[in-house]
Length: 394
Image (tube, rainbow, N blue to C red):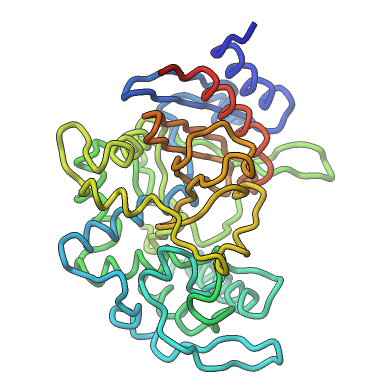
């Protein structure tokens, strides 16, 4: 007989017992109430700290939906237009060029817009060894990270000033490609608001949403709750602490680069407040953060058929994409019993959220294993989703 809680517990326990992760946790909210929570294993095995509801984790790309919400706050207030060219705010994005497979560059046919950034159709890559612009971006990030390690203050605006000079992978709007678009939006928010990206998020989102443990750095008094990140070493067959740096992430109190695509840390409890706000049409605890129509606008597929061809990750089968989030459009292709229109995103270390307006349900899953997002943790995420939807009642 199907026992929901036991099924969910066992999925998480098996991940820890198999050695796939050191610790795992999940929370489900249904109709605004906690339906399920379980944590097992260790947030930091070396220090003997257990995984818990208040464990602080690296969100990585689960930062992106928060950045999208911040952009929409400014759009609602008439302080920016979604079709503004990025170069209006970040001058280095003027006159961008597009990489040609022949080994040279061509002028961009039009300026990249904020809308391109929100939908990952800008042509701006992540560091990537598979193509020339990605290799250039990788070289740039290595340089900037090395400078930070030497004690230089390399802030968000300097990152973006340099990013704007890297050739695009394709003409703006031509197709979907995951990249640094959300980081660009963080820099735009700074220019429009006149405060740092982190300060804007604190004032406009984290304080009203009571997200007390969310930010771009972890204060000293909270480090005992900061989970260790782990990396699988195939040659040794073990998980070991990850001490590297993928995208300039740095969680010290002197952090200067506030990454809109990957920089935030948070807890299950905190992120649930943001998810509840999005799920309930922009309101949380009687406070209006975004308009209901705005949230509805954010949570739809915005890719046309041509752009969607490259939305081909296994984790995105059956999904569209818009405003830095996936949106379920085809249950069969996704192999999911979820409701059409459920939306959310995940992160490089395997953490994951889905928000489902039709069922008034939120599912969050937190782990900290390098490169677990999209593929490594996907089978377990599908199992958690399948069990949760199976247990929902009208």
